[in-house]
Image (spheres, rainbow, N blue to C red):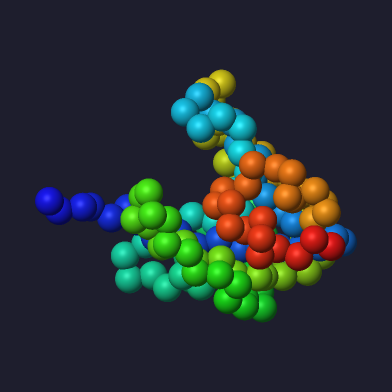
Length: 134
């Protein structure tokens, strides 16, 4: 049996003033959860290029100083995820994809206190163990 692999994903962990930038999502299929901003890696695109493009598209910010944080293979979707620590300077992220929301699929950028991350539904869960608590 041939298993088809979903597209790989790259995401940026931005920590500022003891908070981490996350996307808070609500949808009918998966409920209420948080993810790190990022997105799919295009054909021929490096994870670093993809995450830089995705943060500009999603949050309207230019990220810099990328440092590899975690590479994670999702066993249920056969998708590899690349997480980078990144900086955004004094830029304030602004959600650029409000037009894609529906009552069944809503999301927004939120700064979440690092000290509270262990108590939220963060996907993938392994990030709860890896992120600093302050």
